[in-house]
Image 1 (cartoon, rainbow, N blue to C red):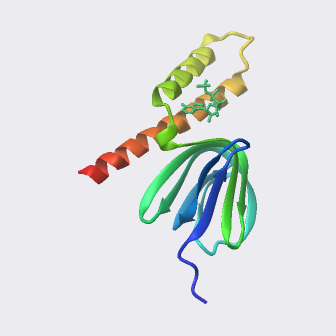
Image 2 (cartoon, rainbow, N blue to C red):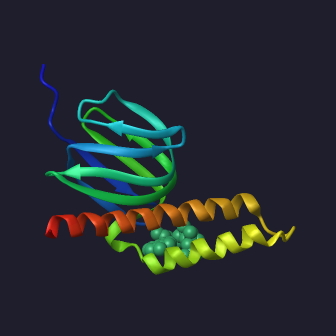
Image 3 (cartoon, rainbow, N blue to C red):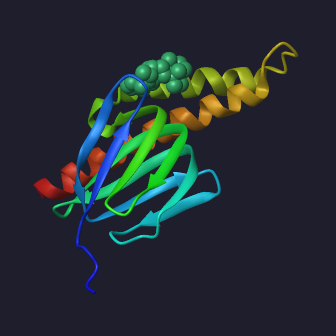
Length: 145
Ligand code: ATP
């Protein structure tokens, strides 16, 4: 039996739907590393980490920065339930760069009152947003040229 060419992707957070549509491929930051999902993938449940979800719909690649949650692969759809997720076009690059600089300053401070584990995660969240925002800009530039 031929595999389907597309699979339905839903990316949701507790307060918004970030994306819903049929896609050709998905790359997801699972906690154990990046995981590729194509239509016809075996069902699975895994944990979402911090990073960038990339998916291709009608040949166009889109990027969503996300942190923590669950990845559910079902026979007819993939549900990514994230604690936080932002479509690259909704990311405020300056805000993410400022958040990264703020967190890095705290990490370098040597202050014993700083929650270093939480601050390292803040750096990773900011880096994932910066990467998503910049890769979207780079793709737009490539499409125009
Ligand atoms: P900041 O220090 O800039 O608030 P943060 O990592 O502490 O960053 P979160 O707690 O992860 O922020 O997210 C809080 C809310 O703000 C979420 O709804 C998230 O989607 C949104 N958000 C955070 N950073 C950005 C950004 N750079 N651009 C757009 N939305 C963002």
